Length: 248
Image 1 (cartoon, rainbow, N blue to C red):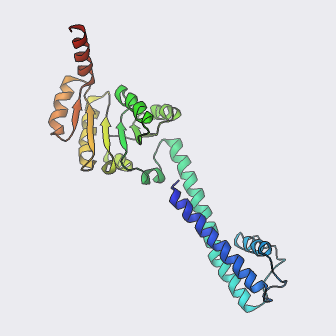
Image 2 (cartoon, rainbow, N blue to C red; image 1 turned 30 degrees about the horizontal axis):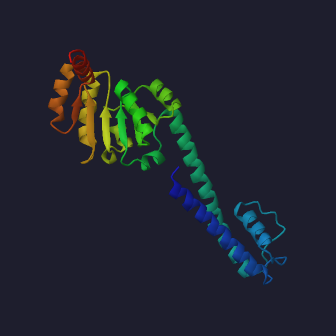
Image 3 (cartoon, rainbow, N blue to C red; image 1 turned 45 degrees about the vertical axis):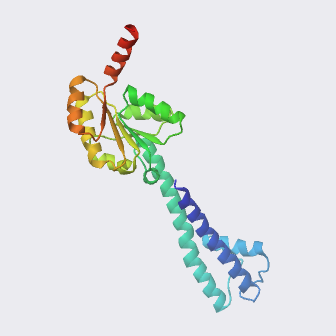
C-alpha cells in the first residue's frame, strides 16, 4: 500500500477527531449538551461514538448551535471515517487478490520507477534475479507460466503472470520508467515478439537486453533490434569461454 496515502488517511481521521473534541468541549462547557462536557476524555468519547454511528444516547446536544455542530461532525466525520475504512480495506483486498492471482496491483504499479523488468524465467533471468536481489536493486519477473510465478513468489521474488508479447499486459509494468528490460525465453519466436513490444514501450533511457537461444534467433534479433537493444547469445559466450580455457 502506498505510504503517502496511508499518511493522508491517518491525517484526515485525526483532523476529524480533533475537530470533534474541540467542538464538543466548546459547546459542552456552554450548556450545549444535556450534561456538561469538561474533559478531553468525555469529548473524545462523544466524538468517536458519533463518527462511528454507535450513538449510545447518554450525551446529546440540546441547543441549536450544538446541534448544528453535531450535524457537521456527523456529515463530515462519518464520510471521512467510513470513506477511509472502505479505501484502506479495498486497497488491502485488491492487493491480496492481485497477489493470489499473480497480477500486479495498482499500488505496486505506482511504485514502479527505475526498475528492471525480467521478461521470462529462463536460466539467465533466474540467475540475474538472484544477483539483483543481492544488490537490493528493484526488479520484477514477468512470465506467462503461472506455476513459475507461484514458485518464484515463494522464493521471495516479485513475480507476475503476464504475456510479454502483449502491449496490454506489459503496460501494467511501466516499461517507460524502467531502467532496463531483459528478455530471456526458451521459445525464440516469443522472445522476438517480446523484443518488438519492448522496443515500442520502453522509455528513452531504458536499456533492452535480449537473450538469443540459437544462432538463427540471434541473427533475426539483431536485425529487429536495429541498435536499440543488446542481443546476447549465452550459449555462444559459454562455448567461447570454455574453448579459450581448453586451448590456452
